[in-house]
Image (cartoon, rainbow, N blue to C red; front, side):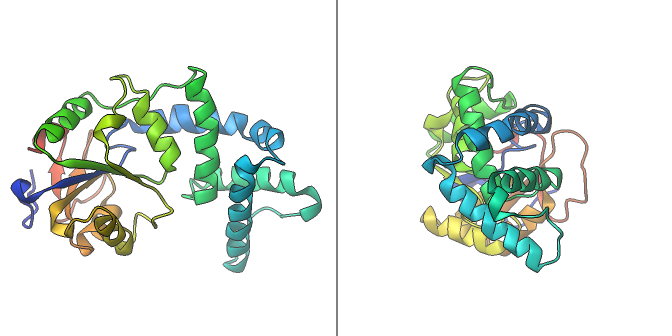
Length: 246
């Protein structure tokens, strides 16, 4: 295991965890959650078109679309006379690019909420996750989640896992409204929100770019590898299970 020279488990007061590939199998996200939202997206938009449920999401998507036009990313046409059609087309375009769009993630979370409530969706976590949550709680370490999925989607996943409701162990949730996961400022904001010094937080993710950003903000880092190492880990500590985090 490559060690993080600045890391000391005993100084860690808070754990900050990514979800996809870290607490939860990638296949669950890409083969269950994303297809579930995609097949129900158009019906969801049309049923709720004049509802306050998606009003702010549509406004945010309009801003994102304008930014895409400005940066010449060639999004699908946005027509005010066929706005619902335009929103659906734009959402599909964002999903095709796996864009970490705040508007898209919010709408996906609301679609998944109906699926969880209907018993059609059940969250998945790796076997070492629940016992780590229990262990960290017993040692008075606070636990936070930082994911590109909305806070709603995060809460839903952890409230209905194959190991039961894990939300009592989670102190705070952060999503893209805090900032991009690849930007150091996002991690500075999280540290401030948690009232922790950056060096008191350990961020665990399967994406080196995110770990680099967190390291730049002063956080301790660990690359979670659920299989083969996908890319050079650099100086980040490597773990293959949460059992390795004392």
